[in-house]
Length: 422
Image 1 (spheres, rainbow, N blue to C red):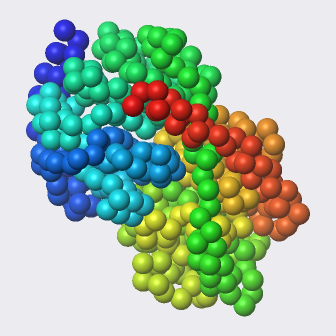
Image 2: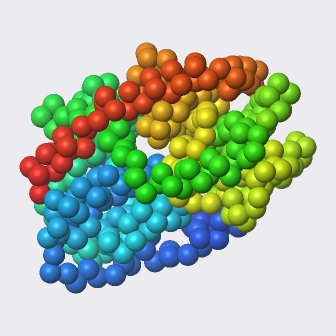
């Protein structure tokens, strides 16, 4: 009965969902495209290979899945992968990361007819879901077809767990439909168990984001970026990565304070969502800064700010900067992945909202690889101190790098669980 009511409610909401897609398409036109895929109308995978379906809701989950997809392609070369997501930015990252080496579409909405249509055309042998994207009808449909489901790199914040408790009659059967949850941390595993996941269905594997490997081919790109950005004055580079609405103003106010003390510094600001690129450019100019745009390959030497309005370059940007602020943390989004900066040995600054990355933040805090800033003044003062003090900056960055190295191995543990299910 709970799933029937949920399904009825979903169908009632469908006009609103479609209107929201149209509204988002005003700023990001790709939201108006490929609607048929969202209703399960995907290409029939007439393949002589068995199919593994991997779902990564958006950009963050896609980046986390890169190492997993590469490992699956190597280990299960006799299988074909289809990678799905829910957002245009996630789709762009999938295509950029994997090209035509995988099949790709949007995932179907969690309606019985759409899911059945998708499963009938794809016929997967296994479904791997990244992190937290659980849908009752999708899980029920896979169970009906004897398709095992693995929740990979599973995480569940206290906030989400409390919300799930209110609909536990819907959540418990859904969790019981999972073959395995590969949890990031003991706390995540316990929250899943408290909601009704059987103890035998959860294994703590760690966070596969730590299994990030820096591609040697990036080194040349990083060296060129560093040369171009620093110029003749060898100015310092402060990266503000994955910023959200409401954070850019904080970053720009802090940067004004930084420039008052360190005139020779470049801010590289990378908004999380492409539809905000022009808005952030206007904010920078309204604050009195000169800007260059990465998409225009404009000279950076005379600019105060470089707007990172390109796609797929953030990893290289982390390698070319001296100090990185990771966004989604001055607004209650819960933060973003700090491991990319840590893997390069770059000190990390964040705001106080880190509930989606509590474990990583705690590990970095314990060794002094991260500083959590309370407000504009705190961000500015911490930035100035680190940009001026090379010794402190190097020690902090190396501490962060050691955390990234020491916590690798989750991918191998996850692959072992997949081997048991496939």
